[in-house]
Length: 170
Image 1 (cartoon, rainbow, N blue to C red):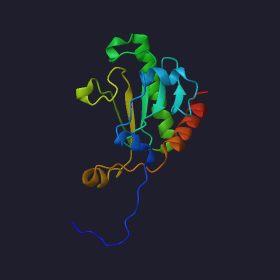
Image 2 (tube, rainbow, N blue to C red):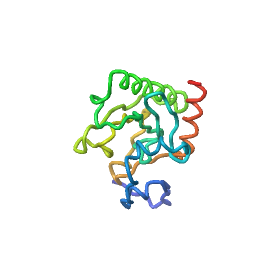
Image 3 (tube, one colour):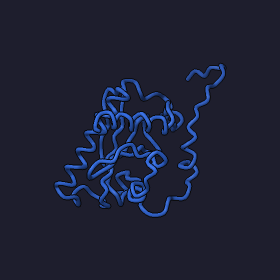
Image 4 (cartoon, one colour):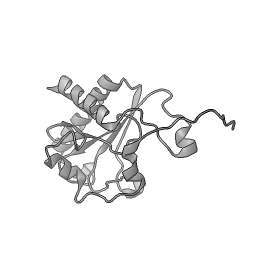
């Protein structure tokens, strides 16, 4: 590999330090406590649907990575009623539409991690991950340095997505 002696660029992702340092977990289930508070901007909530809400992932895989979470505290979608699952999926579709409107991605990774072994960071409360993807969005950083580059601050992205929900669904 050729290494240039040119000045190295700095990549700033200040919100990641809590994750990197293994900061204390918040008390209780964050997916239950965040929507109980009405501080949506502070809590990174972008939309409140009937049976589920959409929140920014505090430690995103890619810019615009959101989570769609049912209000009901369950660990698997199979523990939700048909109606609750329908409302959850409706919120997923709204989130996709809002992300398409704001970020113009080429595609999405959408999924649920069930259980810690499957990668669920918060296994006790099921949630969908929606990760916008663009052609060429993966570069050498994750491979060489275990670093992901998020080009926009979470709060700026949150505000744009929240505005899209308001515009599209109000």
